[in-house]
Image 1 (cartoon, rainbow, N blue to C red):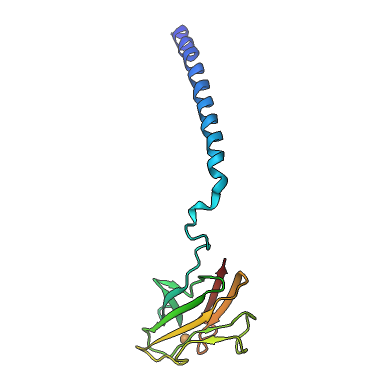
Image 2 (cartoon, rainbow, N blue to C red; image 1 turned 90 degrees about the vertical axis):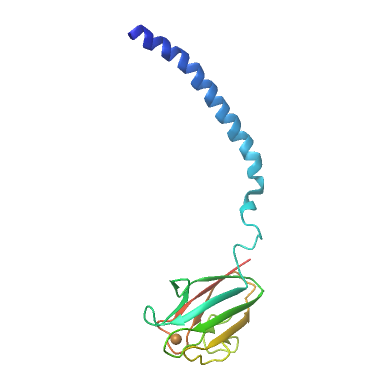
Length: 156
Ligand SMILES: [Cu+2]
């Protein structure tokens, strides 16, 4: 029996070696294909969008909501006109304010939803031009600034 196992191993080793060489060849071939590595991002803008549909309600205190995600970080494309469609499906008044390039509220580069007071059952729209510098920028609801706040992530 021992003898039989030995001969089996003798057959197996060359097979393993051949397999290893094949793997190495495949790996080397793969390196060439990786040269255009970013090919998985089709538009090349890092997933930035120009339009979002956002709900405003009281599902977890006062929140902005996209598909069950609260106070979402919204990726937007640098330098593009961004449209945030807002719907108040809650029972309090809300709005949305973008802090602008200076990342401060109530300065002249802010953008505020129209109308700037959105009653229950009403819709509004926030339009602004995304900063050209990639990074994180802030938004809030002026009526619930400690609960309803989040970020726009500007990507190239
Ligand atoms: Cu609010």
